[in-house]
Amino acid sequence: MSDVETRPPGRPRSAEADEAILQAALELMAADGYRALTIERVRERSGVGKATIYRRYGSKEELVRAAITHLNSDIPLPEDTGSIQGDFAATAQLVLAGAAKTGALTLMPRLLSEVVGEPQMHALFYEHLVEPRRRVVRGIVERAKARGEIRQDVDTDMAIDLMVGPFIYRLIMAGGDAAGIGSPVDLLNTVMAGLTPRA
Amino acid sequence: MSDVETRPPGRPRSAEADEAILQAALELMAADGYRALTIERVRERSGVGKATIYRRYGSKEELVRAAITHLNSDIPLPEDTGSIQGDFAATAQLVLAGAAKTGALTLMPRLLSEVVGEPQMHALFYEHLVEPRRRVVRGIVERAKARGEIRQDVDTDMAIDLMVGPFIYRLIMAGGDAAGIGSPVDLLNTVMAGLTPRA
DNA sequence: TCGAGACGAGACGGTTGCGTTTCGTATCTA
DNA sequence: TAGATACGAAACGCAACCGTCTCGTCTCGA
Image 1: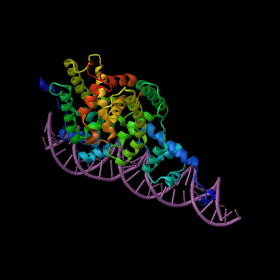
Image 2 (image 1 turned 120 degrees about the horizontal axis):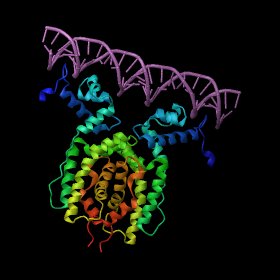
Image 3 (image 1 turned 30 degrees about the vertical axis):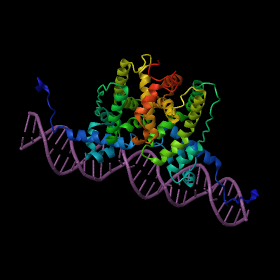
Image 4 (image 1 turned 180 degrees about the horizontal axis):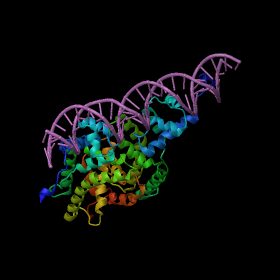
């Protein structure tokens, strides 16, 4: 059965080269953004020949598509800590820790901003960078609703915007310095309580 | 008295060229962002000679600095409408209307995102694009506090982050399409009320 | 062992933007 | 009127990157 896979003749493509190319592309995008990414620099960083890249991807766009898709961030929904504050803090902690290493946190708003006016790239980044993270927050919000911590009549997507928006906003305004954005939990608590006086 | 201004010899610099250069730089940045801005394209769009640009600005950074500074957006604090919803809606309306023309709305988060990792440019954009607009929102928040619409113990800057953050976040995620970001007032009302059930 | 195809290295011509310089012309002061 | 400086236009050499192509080497199946 599985013998049906007839291998094409000649030397097979190198899995090491595959990995090196995608890894280099991701690192360079995290460091300098999408516009600054060039095939030449990917070649330099990955150590492969230029033809090896062009054999796989016909353009920068194809390469970026593969790299972002390859970045299969299966971000797990954190364990139920019993409160939205706990869940949110756990996720924020996880995201911030991972981001310090890869710069993936600033990657999201930066890349999206860079491709304003390029709908296909924007859709790609949204699908593979934004949506997976939003899905996690959606899970947290739904648990909070089930607990009664969040009103049932609040739209879930709006709740996500309110929780995440100020976070991203501060990150951009702070120049990508994750240290100076204050406490996520303080932010959340104020969002929860609202701005108006409680009767 | 005023005759003391001894004019230097030779032909004076052209005010028309000054204006054309800065205007072209701003339009190009609004259209394609900071990284995509080149002296060559500024020359082409402004119709001046290249030397005329270099006589004034020694580098792209100097030119951008002058252009952003020249963009002296004295955004007025709107009239007191009697409620924070009214004030906020009026400002949002004003900003969105002006942005449709110049693209200045997306300009702010886009430019800031692009220069993450370039502290001097980031500081420049923050000072001339973000701060003036934040100042307006601060005025609105302070009026709301005086009216009793917002709790006294809420930090003013945090209130601004909560009101503006989701707005900017949606703008980036929508790909700069100002149409698809929903109602600013809906957003504000939910921020005001908070997410938790009211007793 | 032989042909096919991938490999790293790098040369190639073409394009874009850089920053400088040189035109001939225009506009100021003295 | 003469000297100084700015003007638009365009050419210069330089650098980066593009996408293609040609080496000589290697790793597979037949």
